[in-house]
Image (cartoon, rainbow, N blue to C red; front, side, top):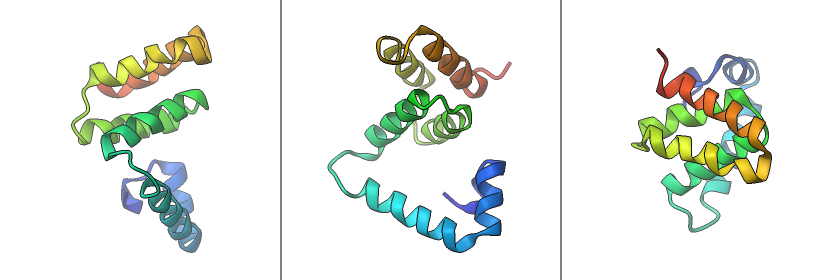
Length: 106
């Protein structure tokens, strides 16, 4: 992801501390390449981690990227439903609303 594509907070850090951003981006790349998961699987896992950590900004970011990568809105919404037994109904419903912020903006 390019610095100009980042959400405001992360973009601010990337611009103010480019060495830190570059190291962080390199770590992310190394983690992605450390195992057999394909890009699609990694994106869905990262969305689920964002949901589990209750990070609205990260959910928005991963949903945007997932849609750009061809993952459907319905698949993304299922990730929120899968979160119900693990993270609880309120967290999953919040995640669904964050996903719909991007997939169904009207």
